[in-house]
Image 1 (cartoon, rainbow, N blue to C red):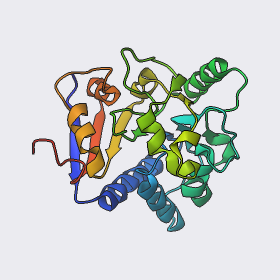
Image 2 (image 1 turned 180 degrees about the horizontal axis):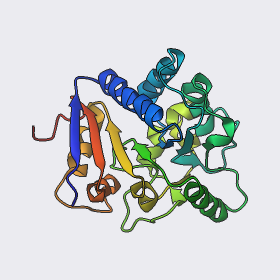
Image 3 (image 1 turned 60 degrees about the horizontal axis):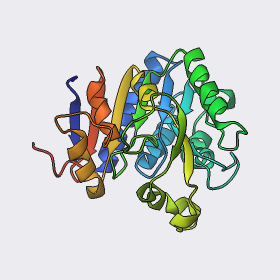
Image 4 (image 1 turned 180 degrees about the vertical axis):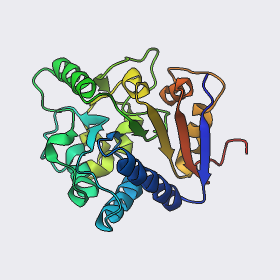
Length: 247
């Protein structure tokens, strides 16, 4: 297994501030940066900090390209509950990303399998992902790759666990029962093909998942453990999320 670098910050805000600064510098050095981005509560401080840096003239996204990890099946792009809406609210409306350079999975695609294949081809045409950021689910998932006896390598349709549906209930009026049962997600191999991979986890609720992720073996029961196979992976934590790992 690769040597994964673990960075621990005082709090979520400090982690977001530091990572946003690194992304801004990477955009300066490599304006055509290809970013893989997550949704969910964890990256919101990061996205707001990137918006702040852009407003200050310190983060230029004009030539950058983005690919989001996942989307709910059956949810239209302009639906207020979609991850596309989420990303517009928290990042895309705050920076100068060209719309044609923003990529999402289409949750309303008539043929989900064909849509997943299309997404893989789009990533390849962009030259691959330079920096992939992923959050960490409390059950150890990354993207929507849920714990299972086996994991699919490439972008695919996935059945969401009850725990994941509850974690996303806020987008659906607080009712887990209204969260779609299925989603489209980048696969584990899709994520691992990125040239640099950062797992961002904050809050005490993620501490157990962090401990399992950084265990001594890679297992499909903790999909995030596959980051241990990546040659250039980092785990960014606040003190609360790092609470159950050895110093």
